[in-house]
Length: 168
Image (cartoon, rainbow, N blue to C red; front, side, top):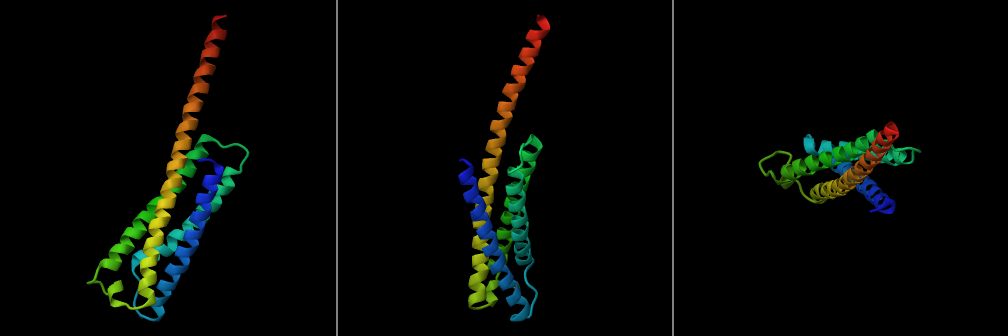
């Protein structure tokens, strides 16, 4: 997958992050203003994760446009993408468990209407966001392994040339 595929993933990640942030903020507001009870910690986490994603997307796109990509940057980029995947993985599982827990005082089973539907949508969008971030992490890892193999070939060729020059 080339650069257009990565750009498509970044746009998808950005749109999902904005959608998730908007829905999670609405549900968070519903808990505090209508339900008059504290929102689940997993929901608060899913308000935080899209903010990290937006900052990460900006970093990843600005960093790629630098003149020279060094190996350390590629590892950092892969780490940023993996961090986002981990955040959404933990967030959507924790929030889905919160929604399914009928004994909890903040469970979706005790709420009605639009807020419950949007709570479920937040969990689904977070799962989609996890899928998008894990896909870009896999692509970054694949690119890193290919570039590492290429660098090993160059290093071996230089070493062989140095040995040949030393003999003559």
